[in-house]
Amino acid sequence: MTIGNQFFDMTMRSVLAGRPLAGEALERFTLAVAQASGPALDELLAAARSMRVERLGREVSLCAIVNAKSGRCSENCAFCAQSAHFETDAPVHPFMEPAEVARAARAMRDMGARRFGIVTSGLTPSGEDFRRLVESVRAVAALGMEADASCGVLGRAQFEELKAAGLKAYHHNLETARSFFPQICTTHDYEEDVQAVRDAVAAGLYVCSGGIFGLGESWNQRAELAVTLRELGVPSVPVNFLSPIPGTPMGSRTPMAPEEALRIVALVRFILPNAHIRICGGRQTVFGQQRGLEPLEAGASGLMIGDYLTTGGLDAAADRQGILDAGWEIEDAHDD
Ligand code: SF4
Image (cartoon, rainbow, N blue to C red):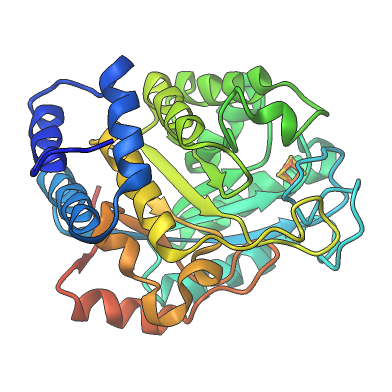
């Protein structure tokens, strides 16, 4: 396909004027993104960056997580180190003491993280696990941070109790496009994840929902996921890139090239011009420390700092300094 000069720039203007990418225009755009290289790639990234600055300013939102309960998950997501279906070296431990969660949160607050997510493996926490979750949320909120949780599928009553304890945001990824999901997970239905996101939105929480890229999905499926997230109205979209984990069905895949990852960030930005796009797991695998902030030049507006669930992250202090050196601002932990 040949695209004319300024194609990305003109598309940016059209999106900013209120014409969301859809139908044939989206297909044409997605193909152009998939093929962008050289000057066309530069134009794409510059347009995505301008769009982000226009809609979200120059602030970078930093968040961090703790793997509060790890391993032995009943689900079989093909990329995941924590699934009980695969033999991996991922840590296995029960729900941490809330004081331990608070210690981890305080350390990341000191590195500039505004949001702190309590993440547990498994579909739904209950009994003692749910009690610890509520106490952990209370402890993180008491530190002046936004307490987030990512704990599978919760019901309305659980959301209400967590909100009363100070929960501000709920995170639940859709992982990938509906049309690709059956190749990634067969132990639950895509619609359960979509419903979990709808329930969190209905509970009045700030909802983070995104996916993981590099699983073998097509470019059209990447766009499909972003459109689903747009339809759900989520304000925050975590973008993860596969870190191939030995022992999982994805263990022998090659990590994505940085340029491909940047094109994905730009694609998501064009489809979701108003959302916070946060680069999370896999940033270290794809970009390394030296290029780790490049997604900010492709339309991303947030980064997860510190370690990820089962893989080490980049140096949080170096990330923070690099953000400031590049002329971005770090979102204040206390303004809302
Ligand atoms: S991604 Fe979540 S639901 Fe899927 S196996 Fe991993 S912990 Fe379980």
